Image (cartoon, rainbow, N blue to C red; front, side, top):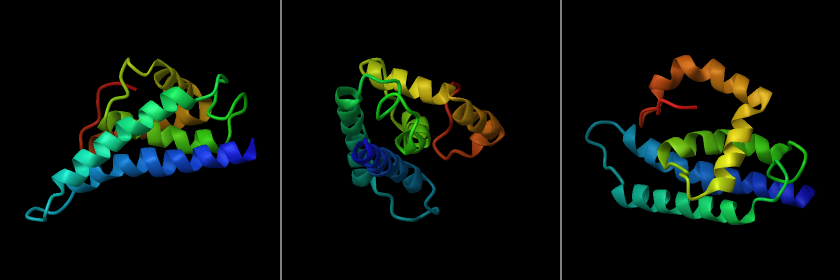
Length: 131
């Protein structure tokens, strides 16, 4: 299980959070700075590919690596929280959507989300009126 946890931890960091960050970073570049529309488009596409991989490969347990909440879920929570704001997971990925919902309902994650509500207006792409 340890290797699976570490793999999923890295997957969420690199393929979900990493691809979420490019559109956010692009929008906060200073006025007159070169934008990267190709990079943003590719990151959004790669984010959807990551979603599809997760939809097909998440286990049957409630958490990323099975029945226990692990480091992989700690990486998944912020990654999927913000990535869904950048590129919505959508109804075509019910397993991933349900997993994200379970993450957001976990007491520690729910507390972090609630305590961050006053700062949502700082999210550069605009925070959706959900979650």
